[in-house]
Image: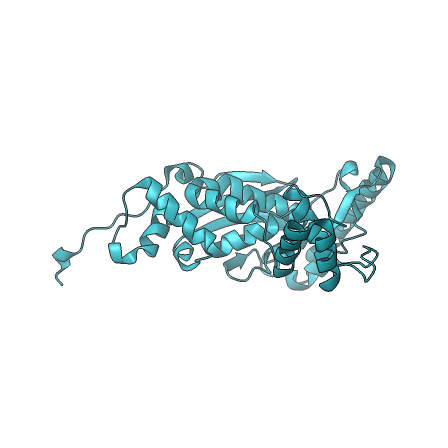
Amino acid sequence: MQQSDFESISRVSVPDLDSILGKPFPILDDGFVRLVDYMGSDESIVQAARVSYGKGTKKVNEDRGLIRYLMRHRHSTPFEMCELKLHVRVPMDTWRQWIRHRMANVNEYSTRYSVAIDSAQTTLPGEWRVQSIGNKQGSDGFLESSKGDHLTKRETEFQKFANDIYNERLEMGVAREQARKDLPLATYTEAYWKIDLHNLLHFLALRMDDHAQLEIRLFAKTIGEQIVQKWVPHTWEAFVDYRLSALHLTKYDSEIIASLNRSGKEGARKKAIELGMLDEQGSTAKKSREREELEYKLSQLGFAIPW
């Protein structure tokens, strides 16, 4: 083929995203997320899926339908054609959860080469959360204000003390790589984070969920609603419909719901006993996280709990 046989290509541009390039979205007391760069759009996803058709369909409704089909049937590679690069400022304890999502390119601020960021996340008296009884890794409700006042005061004292010690070490000539070792996890860090859309949506599905820790949920919600929604609106719509707001039924869920439909509450109860979600007497005394999750799904679907 000759060079003249190839059509010219222009870089994909999304005006709604261009308008927020570099704009910081504040999160928590001193954190932020801002868009640095992006590649691709909804059109890029369609083009990748219909590679044999070149540019693909020109009808917007057909493009939307294809994206929804891809999302519904969990086709991932077309979504990998789009990438996003973010600059984030986040507390170190939240960043530890964030960095577990390994399918990304990361460059983090180094307190070995540079002085630590002089900022730490603070907690208002009404923001101290109580440990959840049913979920070992979560919280449920808030402490009373009198305890919150005490804890916030102690937090302020501790963070100042830790920062004073850190600065004292630096002034005495201690290497930054060692001086930093007692900094609290509330200390802010910064990073550039580049990730493709498929893996970004996986991150958002996990971190926007109500079970995720509040702090990282706030970052994920901002990324999703303030950036991704503007970037790939058809993909975001499908993601909300088929992931965020959808219910996933397991094999056990389906069998119990089918039994409920065929044989009423008694049939569902017998099936739950058979599958080990209830004890032999059909009681809920036996703890079952799977049963609790099914009960939530049933309530969302408008069913009365059948036991």
